[in-house]
Image (cartoon, rainbow over all chains, first blue to last red; front, side):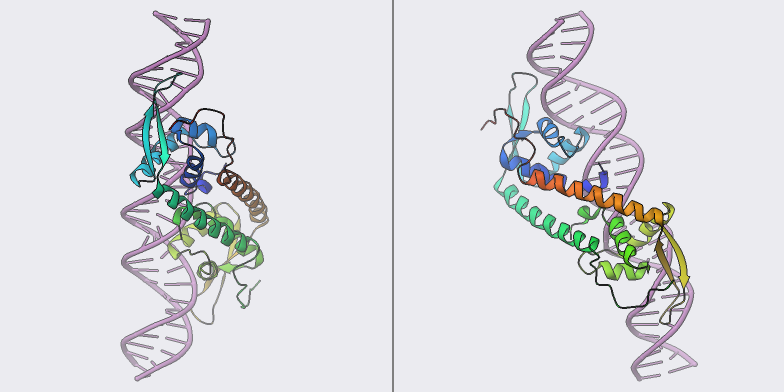
Length: 113
Length: 113
DNA sequence: AAAGATACCTTGCGATACAAGGTATCTTGT
DNA sequence: ACAAGATACCTTGTATCGCAAGGTATCTTT
Protein backbone atom coordinates (compact mmCIF):
# COMPACT_ATOMS: atom_id res chain seq x y z
CA UNK A 1 0.00 0.00 0.00
CA UNK A 2 1.24 3.44 -0.95
CA UNK A 3 2.90 5.09 2.03
CA UNK A 4 2.22 8.67 1.06
CA UNK A 5 -1.53 8.22 0.76
CA UNK A 6 -1.78 7.34 4.42
CA UNK A 7 -0.32 10.61 5.59
CA UNK A 8 -2.85 12.42 7.68
CA UNK A 9 -5.42 9.63 7.64
CA UNK A 10 -3.93 7.27 10.18
CA UNK A 11 -4.69 9.47 13.16
CA UNK A 12 -8.28 9.70 12.00
CA UNK A 13 -8.43 5.93 11.57
CA UNK A 14 -7.05 5.37 15.04
CA UNK A 15 -9.53 7.79 16.57
CA UNK A 16 -12.33 6.05 14.68
CA UNK A 17 -11.31 2.68 16.07
CA UNK A 18 -11.07 4.10 19.57
CA UNK A 19 -14.54 5.57 19.16
CA UNK A 20 -15.82 2.00 19.19
CA UNK A 21 -13.77 0.68 22.07
CA UNK A 22 -10.73 1.50 24.11
CA UNK A 23 -7.62 -0.23 22.82
CA UNK A 24 -3.86 -0.36 23.14
CA UNK A 25 -1.22 0.33 20.53
CA UNK A 26 -0.25 -3.24 19.84
CA UNK A 27 -3.86 -4.19 19.29
CA UNK A 28 -4.54 -1.13 17.15
CA UNK A 29 -1.80 -2.27 14.80
CA UNK A 30 -3.31 -5.71 14.39
CA UNK A 31 -6.83 -4.30 14.01
CA UNK A 32 -5.82 -1.80 11.37
CA UNK A 33 -3.51 -4.28 9.68
CA UNK A 34 -6.53 -5.97 8.20
CA UNK A 35 -6.91 -3.77 5.18
CA UNK A 36 -4.61 -0.88 5.72
CA UNK A 37 -1.23 -1.74 6.97
CA UNK A 38 0.41 0.19 9.70
CA UNK A 39 3.53 -0.75 11.57
CA UNK A 40 4.63 -0.40 15.16
CA UNK A 41 7.18 2.22 14.23
CA UNK A 42 4.24 4.31 13.09
CA UNK A 43 1.78 3.75 15.88
CA UNK A 44 3.82 4.69 18.93
CA UNK A 45 4.84 8.17 17.83
CA UNK A 46 1.30 8.62 16.54
CA UNK A 47 -0.27 7.71 19.88
CA UNK A 48 2.08 10.13 21.58
CA UNK A 49 0.81 12.88 19.29
CA UNK A 50 -2.83 12.06 19.95
CA UNK A 51 -2.09 12.20 23.65
CA UNK A 52 -0.26 15.52 23.37
CA UNK A 53 -3.29 16.95 21.60
CA UNK A 54 -5.48 15.67 24.46
CA UNK A 55 -7.54 13.58 22.07
CA UNK A 56 -6.91 10.41 24.05
CA UNK A 57 -6.19 9.56 27.67
CA UNK A 58 -4.43 6.46 28.90
CA UNK A 59 -4.67 3.88 31.63
CA UNK A 60 -2.72 0.72 32.36
CA UNK A 61 -4.30 -2.70 32.48
CA UNK A 62 -2.46 -5.86 33.46
CA UNK A 63 -2.68 -8.61 30.92
CA UNK A 64 -3.01 -12.32 31.50
CA UNK A 65 -0.82 -13.08 28.52
CA UNK A 66 2.10 -10.65 28.56
CA UNK A 67 3.22 -7.29 29.89
CA UNK A 68 0.77 -4.59 30.95
CA UNK A 69 -1.18 -2.85 28.25
CA UNK A 70 -1.45 0.88 27.92
CA UNK A 71 -5.04 1.45 26.95
CA UNK A 72 -6.11 4.58 25.10
CA UNK A 73 -9.51 6.12 25.59
CA UNK A 74 -11.04 8.77 23.34
CA UNK A 75 -11.63 12.06 25.17
CA UNK A 76 -14.57 14.39 24.44
CA UNK A 77 -12.06 16.57 22.74
CA UNK A 78 -10.93 13.61 20.64
CA UNK A 79 -14.49 12.81 19.68
CA UNK A 80 -15.01 16.32 18.43
CA UNK A 81 -11.73 16.21 16.56
CA UNK A 82 -12.74 12.95 14.91
CA UNK A 83 -15.87 14.60 13.56
CA UNK A 84 -13.82 17.48 12.20
CA UNK A 85 -11.37 15.09 10.57
CA UNK A 86 -14.25 13.12 9.04
CA UNK A 87 -15.64 16.28 7.51
CA UNK A 88 -12.28 17.37 6.16
CA UNK A 89 -11.62 13.90 4.80
CA UNK A 90 -14.95 13.81 2.97
CA UNK A 91 -14.39 17.24 1.50
CA UNK A 92 -10.92 16.25 0.43
CA UNK A 93 -12.04 13.02 -1.21
CA UNK A 94 -14.87 14.85 -2.96
CA UNK A 95 -12.43 17.36 -4.38
CA UNK A 96 -9.94 14.75 -5.56
CA UNK A 97 -12.70 12.76 -7.24
CA UNK A 98 -13.85 15.98 -8.83
CA UNK A 99 -10.40 16.48 -10.34
CA UNK A 100 -10.27 12.84 -11.41
CA UNK A 101 -13.61 13.21 -13.17
CA UNK A 102 -12.06 15.96 -15.25
CA UNK A 103 -13.13 18.56 -12.77
CA UNK A 104 -11.01 21.68 -12.50
CA UNK A 105 -12.84 23.90 -14.99
CA UNK A 106 -11.45 23.22 -18.45
CA UNK A 107 -10.39 26.89 -18.64
CA UNK A 108 -11.16 28.12 -22.09
CA UNK A 109 -7.80 28.62 -23.67
CA UNK A 110 -5.89 27.25 -26.60
CA UNK A 111 -4.17 23.91 -25.90
CA UNK A 112 -1.38 23.63 -28.48
CA UNK A 113 0.15 20.56 -30.21
CA UNK B 1 -6.81 22.47 3.52
CA UNK B 2 -4.88 19.84 5.43
CA UNK B 3 -1.41 19.48 3.99
CA UNK B 4 -0.87 15.89 4.99
CA UNK B 5 -3.93 14.59 3.21
CA UNK B 6 -2.57 15.75 -0.12
CA UNK B 7 0.57 13.68 0.14
CA UNK B 8 0.64 11.23 -2.71
CA UNK B 9 -2.50 12.52 -4.41
CA UNK B 10 -1.17 15.63 -6.10
CA UNK B 11 0.81 13.76 -8.74
CA UNK B 12 -2.32 11.79 -9.59
CA UNK B 13 -4.34 15.01 -9.79
CA UNK B 14 -1.79 16.60 -12.08
CA UNK B 15 -1.71 13.56 -14.34
CA UNK B 16 -5.52 13.60 -14.45
CA UNK B 17 -5.57 17.24 -15.52
CA UNK B 18 -2.94 16.56 -18.16
CA UNK B 19 -5.03 13.65 -19.43
CA UNK B 20 -7.55 16.26 -20.58
CA UNK B 21 -5.16 18.74 -22.11
CA UNK B 22 -1.51 19.66 -22.14
CA UNK B 23 -0.71 22.39 -19.68
CA UNK B 24 2.14 24.24 -17.99
CA UNK B 25 3.02 24.44 -14.33
CA UNK B 26 1.74 27.93 -13.69
CA UNK B 27 -1.59 27.07 -15.23
CA UNK B 28 -1.80 23.77 -13.39
CA UNK B 29 -1.53 25.67 -10.12
CA UNK B 30 -4.39 27.97 -11.01
CA UNK B 31 -6.51 25.09 -12.34
CA UNK B 32 -6.03 22.97 -9.25
CA UNK B 33 -6.35 25.97 -6.96
CA UNK B 34 -10.07 25.92 -7.53
CA UNK B 35 -10.91 23.39 -4.88
CA UNK B 36 -7.66 21.94 -3.74
CA UNK B 37 -4.93 24.36 -3.13
CA UNK B 38 -1.46 23.76 -4.33
CA UNK B 39 1.37 26.25 -4.40
CA UNK B 40 4.17 26.92 -6.84
CA UNK B 41 6.75 25.61 -4.40
CA UNK B 42 4.95 22.28 -4.68
CA UNK B 43 4.35 22.09 -8.39
CA UNK B 44 7.81 22.61 -9.79
CA UNK B 45 9.59 19.84 -7.90
CA UNK B 46 6.53 17.66 -8.58
CA UNK B 47 6.70 18.24 -12.33
CA UNK B 48 10.37 17.39 -12.25
CA UNK B 49 9.52 14.07 -10.62
CA UNK B 50 6.84 13.26 -13.16
CA UNK B 51 9.31 13.99 -15.90
CA UNK B 52 12.01 11.83 -14.29
CA UNK B 53 9.53 8.96 -14.17
CA UNK B 54 8.83 9.51 -17.89
CA UNK B 55 5.16 10.11 -17.21
CA UNK B 56 5.23 13.48 -18.97
CA UNK B 57 7.24 15.06 -21.76
CA UNK B 58 7.77 18.76 -22.29
CA UNK B 59 7.84 21.33 -25.04
CA UNK B 60 8.20 25.10 -25.03
CA UNK B 61 5.57 27.45 -26.39
CA UNK B 62 5.99 31.20 -26.66
CA UNK B 63 3.25 33.15 -24.98
CA UNK B 64 1.62 36.36 -26.13
CA UNK B 65 1.31 37.57 -22.57
CA UNK B 66 4.54 36.76 -20.77
CA UNK B 67 7.58 34.51 -20.87
CA UNK B 68 7.60 31.16 -22.69
CA UNK B 69 5.58 28.37 -21.22
CA UNK B 70 6.92 24.90 -20.61
CA UNK B 71 4.05 22.65 -21.58
CA UNK B 72 3.72 19.15 -20.19
CA UNK B 73 2.19 16.33 -22.17
CA UNK B 74 1.11 12.99 -20.73
CA UNK B 75 3.10 10.06 -22.15
CA UNK B 76 1.62 6.61 -22.77
CA UNK B 77 3.55 5.56 -19.74
CA UNK B 78 1.97 8.37 -17.76
CA UNK B 79 -1.49 7.36 -18.91
CA UNK B 80 -0.92 3.84 -17.66
CA UNK B 81 0.45 5.16 -14.39
CA UNK B 82 -2.60 7.34 -13.95
CA UNK B 83 -4.84 4.30 -14.22
CA UNK B 84 -2.76 2.47 -11.63
CA UNK B 85 -2.90 5.46 -9.30
CA UNK B 86 -6.67 5.70 -9.75
CA UNK B 87 -7.08 2.08 -8.77
CA UNK B 88 -4.83 2.42 -5.73
CA UNK B 89 -6.62 5.60 -4.70
CA UNK B 90 -10.02 3.95 -4.90
CA UNK B 91 -8.83 0.97 -2.91
CA UNK B 92 -7.33 3.24 -0.33
CA UNK B 93 -10.43 5.38 0.04
CA UNK B 94 -12.58 2.26 0.30
CA UNK B 95 -10.43 0.94 3.10
CA UNK B 96 -10.40 4.21 5.05
CA UNK B 97 -14.17 4.51 4.76
CA UNK B 98 -14.39 0.95 5.94
CA UNK B 99 -12.46 1.83 9.07
CA UNK B 100 -14.54 4.97 9.56
CA UNK B 101 -17.71 2.91 9.35
CA UNK B 102 -16.44 0.89 12.28
CA UNK B 103 -14.78 -1.55 9.99
CA UNK B 104 -11.71 -3.33 11.31
CA UNK B 105 -13.35 -6.45 12.76
CA UNK B 106 -14.40 -5.68 16.33
CA UNK B 107 -12.06 -8.45 17.53
CA UNK B 108 -13.84 -10.37 20.24
CA UNK B 109 -11.96 -9.47 23.37
CA UNK B 110 -12.72 -7.76 26.62
CA UNK B 111 -12.64 -3.95 26.45
CA UNK B 112 -12.15 -2.74 30.00
CA UNK B 113 -13.36 0.47 31.71
C1' DA C 1 16.73 -22.67 30.90
C1' DA C 2 15.55 -21.45 26.25
C1' DA C 3 12.28 -19.91 22.89
C1' DG C 4 8.54 -17.45 21.38
C1' DA C 5 4.74 -14.47 21.76
C1' DT C 6 3.14 -10.21 23.71
C1' DA C 7 3.81 -5.41 24.55
C1' DC C 8 6.29 -1.36 25.06
C1' DC C 9 9.61 2.12 22.93
C1' DT C 10 13.37 5.01 20.07
C1' DT C 11 16.48 6.36 16.22
C1' DG C 12 17.38 7.54 11.57
C1' DC C 13 15.76 7.76 6.92
C1' DG C 14 12.93 8.94 2.83
C1' DA C 15 9.21 11.24 0.72
C1' DT C 16 6.64 15.27 -0.02
C1' DA C 17 4.09 19.80 0.57
C1' DC C 18 5.04 24.60 1.37
C1' DA C 19 6.63 29.27 2.47
C1' DA C 20 9.87 32.33 1.11
C1' DG C 21 12.76 34.02 -1.90
C1' DG C 22 14.85 34.81 -6.54
C1' DT C 23 14.98 35.63 -11.93
C1' DA C 24 13.24 36.92 -16.48
C1' DT C 25 9.57 38.45 -19.75
C1' DC C 26 5.81 41.11 -21.36
C1' DT C 27 2.02 44.58 -20.93
C1' DT C 28 -0.05 48.67 -19.09
C1' DG C 29 -0.34 53.12 -16.91
C1' DT C 30 1.66 57.58 -16.38
C1' DA D 1 10.59 56.21 -21.39
C1' DC D 2 9.94 54.24 -16.87
C1' DA D 3 7.67 52.01 -13.12
C1' DA D 4 4.50 48.66 -11.75
C1' DG D 5 2.27 44.55 -12.13
C1' DA D 6 1.12 40.26 -14.08
C1' DT D 7 2.98 36.13 -16.05
C1' DA D 8 6.12 32.35 -15.84
C1' DC D 9 10.05 29.96 -14.48
C1' DC D 10 12.95 28.09 -10.53
C1' DT D 11 15.54 26.84 -5.80
C1' DT D 12 16.37 26.44 -0.78
C1' DG D 13 15.14 25.23 3.75
C1' DT D 14 11.65 23.56 6.96
C1' DA D 15 8.08 20.55 8.96
C1' DT D 16 5.54 16.44 8.99
C1' DC D 17 4.83 11.84 8.81
C1' DG D 18 5.19 6.73 7.88
C1' DC D 19 8.46 2.97 8.36
C1' DA D 20 12.31 -0.23 8.85
C1' DA D 21 15.36 -1.56 12.14
C1' DG D 22 16.63 -2.09 16.45
C1' DG D 23 16.10 -2.41 21.56
C1' DT D 24 13.77 -3.73 26.28
C1' DA D 25 10.72 -6.23 29.41
C1' DT D 26 7.08 -9.63 30.57
C1' DC D 27 4.76 -13.91 30.43
C1' DT D 28 3.89 -18.67 28.70
C1' DT D 29 5.36 -22.83 26.77
C1' DT D 30 8.60 -26.31 25.96
